[in-house]
Length: 491
Image 1 (cartoon, one colour):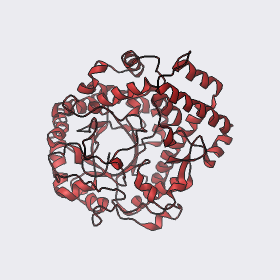
Image 2 (tube, one colour; image 1 turned 120 degrees about the vertical axis):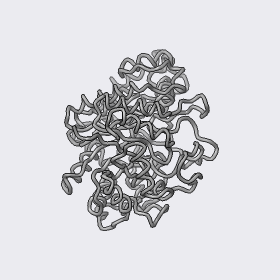
Image 3 (tube, helix red, strand yellow; image 1 turned 120 degrees about the horizontal axis):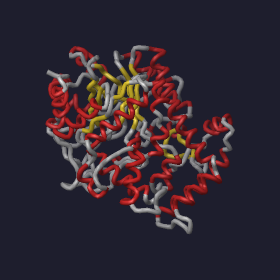
Image 4 (cartoon, one colour; image 1 turned 30 degrees about the vertical axis):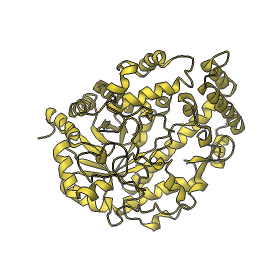
């Protein structure tokens, strides 16, 4: 059996602050890291910059927040690859302009036998992207026929922009792989799983490109739009406690019966997201077949049976070399606690969180602590094993499964230094509203070790240490190494 992949997500700032050789030596010795997910491009705090302002700084790196962090492309930009998109090149990040994350790190990684992956975070909600020329012309169109907050997967300029980034990296760097991240649920999922801010235009997309696809599928986009307008009104009423005489669930189901286009449009949206995956996969393989391609499947797959139904591992395995399944056990407790509360103000508003929680656990095949205890306990290591086993069975041997291992992912609200631009719109449905404090769950070396062991027990071919090195404590990172030593995978 080949050695498992032990990948670490890490951004440019860590190498600039601490030194390339120092970081690689540290993570290799402490965690047995043999692969790097190098975060470029990124415009969001989940993968870029130092610790999110307001959360405790870790015990390494520069001991101050980078409050002016912007993000962008941390590799060299080669404009000749961007001729097929009106957006133009993926702009060089203003931070560390003399540092080339791929060019400066890959040679040092190779000398240590480490693989290097371009870790591309879509950052669809980032304000900075709105400053790119013509980026606003790629926005989705909402139910009121106005531009929305997110770019459309079917817009050729947006699609070609991402493919140009991929082509740029493939042409100029000896990357071993590419991992692409898109943390977006579709319109029906958004409205079912919680109250939806009406002004954000999250119920989409009705642009001319999506309408053309709908016509090919014999879907009446006007009927879909009409149905979603009524569903948005339902969502708003239920959110404030007005469930009507028939209740929230029955009135929701009635709308599905009256407008089957609601489900058809959700499928169209999800298929468009997955077509982006296919295009990236095909582009990579056409250029360099040996380069590995995979996807980050975000945490909602553990919480929402509806999002889980959208993400079919078997289907995805035909255009994947690996899938990084987010199975962050520690932060799952506060996140799922909030998710259950949210859905009890939407689809399941006829019941309380305490009543809904055991039902959803049963549907998802989970066994976790009592609902009121989740914020302080997190999820168990057995959750990681179960999610890994399910994913391994789903891909049927056609792709590797590399679960994400939670090392110090922040939970709760940040402190007072947080700026509005560091807060992503709560559109993914997994953010925790709970206050920070001693009552919230925390990672320990033992919990990280247990999660890593559970991933391999579940049949994983590797793990991805997440979210980013610049927020991890070194003793907790060492929990990965302890697990590998127990498995006799590390000296």
